[in-house]
Length: 333
Image 1 (tube, helix red, strand yellow):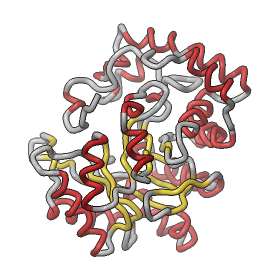
Image 2: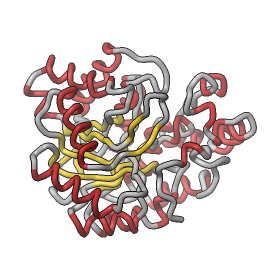
Image 3: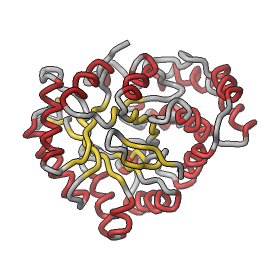
């Protein structure tokens, strides 16, 4: 597996990571055995970068990773580079809010370390920013956790390039996690450039467009049974068929090139910069193999032009989030 560097610490990680939200039931039901099979295949393929969060399945994702590491022992523990997140909290009635205080971040990281069965993670992200707390203060809180040895590097999810620049003045920011794919190209309006300038990784989640950039996109009926997808603007009764049609040329192009659609989507992302690290999630070992094949595909200028021709920027119908889903991410363009 091709290696890339994570953050200013230059930690070697696999070019393709794994997004462990899929170890919860976010995109459909899963279980321990399916999750362990994915991690087994990550070992086989050389996928070292595992991304999770304290809120994925209310800790279930971290628990499954921790149980797997305990079962496999030191070899697996040394093999994987783990990133997790904190900063999203819930009231007793289930209402979600953001807490970026040092007390909350440290308490949640302590719980994550216990679930994962490790003393330190490579990377702790603030999952969502609390706009009422200056980002300088949040960066200093994260720096405190680095000094305490609980995380090696720090990051932010869904922040603007300007916020990144300010935070980086307090402590080096190793990574910014943002949705980035051929379906969502807003990071090209400053975040791709700023992360490269500051030697930070751009960790791309949903790199296959929440299934739109695959050979077998989620059906409209399946989307109606998933809490997030059924309200997402790109998967509504009017937009869904348009997006399936609009992305059909990309599927045809991938077939012509002899690779899966998701593999081609990964290859395109990796071509956008050496600091770009896609973290797709899947519950299928077969699909993981398809994704990993994209790492070995080197795209020529002609290939990139052909991709641009079938999926020009702005092709996707509907916003990437519904109104309520936009609470937290920073808009900057």
